[in-house]
Length: 206
Ligand code: SF4
Ligand code: SF4
Ligand code: SF4
Image (cartoon, rainbow, N blue to C red; front, side, top):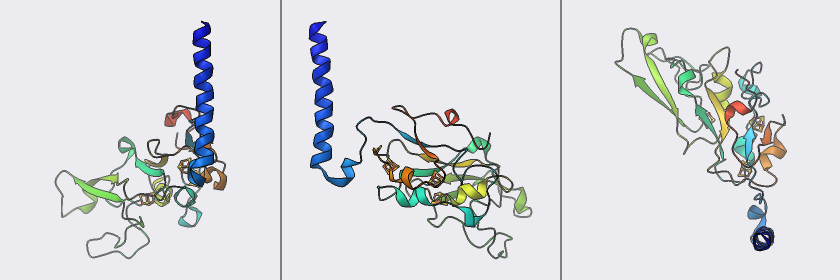
């Protein structure tokens, strides 16, 4: 027992020493890493891009894209396919305010990074375009979590299948997350050592 206790104390002190060394020795970015390992998550009932009742391109908050210490933010859009309507004219894919082309579709895409892939499902009916359905997939090597598609996908134009999520495999778990500091809605929250399932955070679409 005494041996176990001594070993635990040693490991605890070693962990503290390692954290201190990282903070002192490796500069500003590493100094922001959390030694506790607590994860960050977006509360969908608070985030202005996700929660119901807020609409309009002028309301989009891009702080998740702009404030992360990583070159490409750890926040990305995710499409929950079982909720998606697979619409022909998806307001998250097309800029529905742009001019309509000869094929009856808007001529511009919404995503500034061309990070949404539109793939036809089944045979295309050229005579009834609105009767065709598409799968919309986020290319997470391009997406920076700007939130524009999320704002457009929600009610009343969409079904709210696209949301913003923190990628736990990318996030550095900074002690003082710069997104959390910048978030105007207090929607960027610590969720403890284990990533919380999305449903653990009160849902804006539920
Ligand atoms: S969050 Fe922004 S960058 Fe990512 S897919 Fe949506 S519009 Fe494109
Ligand atoms: S904790 Fe750090 S790496 Fe993770 S989202 Fe915040 S700023 Fe980005
Ligand atoms: S900074 Fe806050 S409100 Fe803005 S997109 Fe991120 S979580 Fe949502």
